[in-house]
Amino acid sequence: MRAFGTPVADSIAQKLHLTAQHLNDEAMEWGHRFSMKSGFTGSVPQEMVDGCLARLDEAPKGGDCSFTFWSMGRAIARVDVDATAFPTRDAAFWASAEAMWDDPGSDQAHREWVRSGMSAITPFAVAGRYVNDVSEPGLEDVVRSVYGDAKYERLVQLKRKWDPDNVFRLNQNIRP
Image (tube, rainbow, N blue to C red; front, side, top):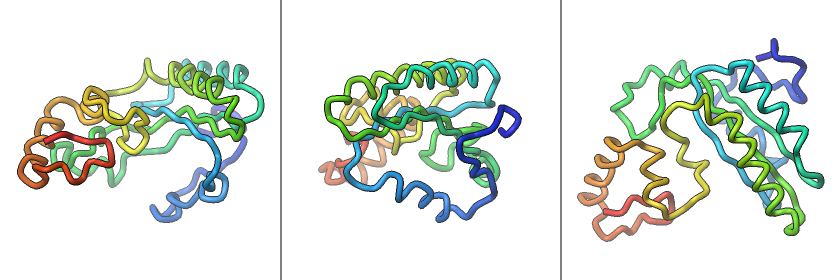
């Protein structure tokens, strides 16, 4: 990753999972407006990096727009892909376009930038999405796109068995 140039912040190091989960606690404290889209990639090709860099030049003023790349693999990839609902265990990276701002009048500009930023990643993305980053709640086709058809249907069967009344629905819901 360092070969692409000098990053704004260099946090590349092996970390405990709990440490990684708290990396952005202060920066993303409650009250900011936030938008992100993400996907899994098999690599970080130069063409994707160039597309991300070009979109950084188009970032709206008054906010913080960025791309993040998280290394996947290792222990994640050692689990059989059919053993859990997690969709993409063989991806090398999780990549995202993110924007954070405070002015409600900047909502549209920042959300449009995130969509544009993600268009630099999408051509290199593999199937599946990280469910906690999906911001289009309640749409079955979106939830299906997270897991893929086979896993989604398996989750529907589990939901019918264990939660037929759809009590646990305040998430990326899978209807029983």
